[in-house]
Length: 267
Picture 1 (spheres, helix red, strand yellow):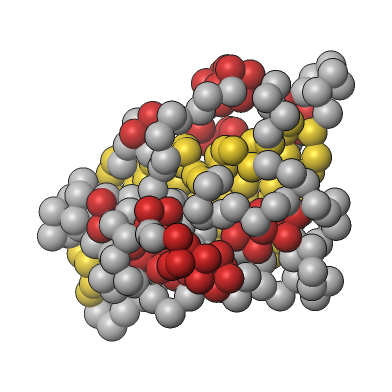
Picture 2 (picture 1 turned 30 degrees about the horizontal axis):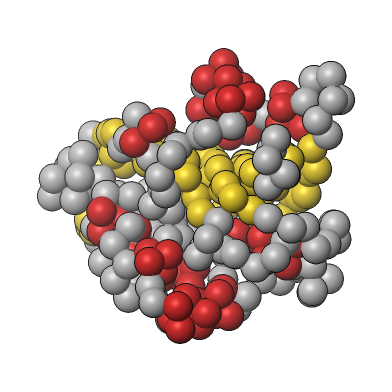
């Protein structure tokens, strides 16, 4: 997914890359997020760059609050994180039609993944992005971004640091070429005025060649990501069979969804 670490350190030339790689410095994946606390001038630059980011799909550092929408929290807990990542949320979040939701996607995407070490990318992820938009009682929007039908292949030459090497499996390694499946979700809160209902991921570019979290949010709503509207909750699961692995499943999640667990590793 998008590489992003949680530290805010400079991890790449584009925002999605920076957010992805940096988030792992604090134990999350590389995806979105450390630019949230930059000075105003740098935040403006970050928002501008966000429109040029390549799509990445790793988790971002979660902002404060977790899931604050009681309906969304109830549905997430009832379904479980794995099913919530892949189910049709339009009907799940609004079974009676009283609070209509909007669905966008799927948008084919790919991204490198930094794991918990945030130094060298451990895998290349491919997945379909789906966005479900829900209006809250306050009038603000909550956007759920799902990463469906995903797969990954490990990178490097020989043996590299595993995704959990700097957290759940200290000094773990994974061989090059290991393949597996992945899925997950982001919950993005405090999204304000909607400016577009374009069916494209990029409301300004029908080609949809640059789909990312930032692109969707900032071209369908008043630009706010990742400065004032943030990922407050995330969950990702990576699974791989055999291939000489000692650990076959890695969970990368925000604290309110149980935190990280397991690994994809040969040692």
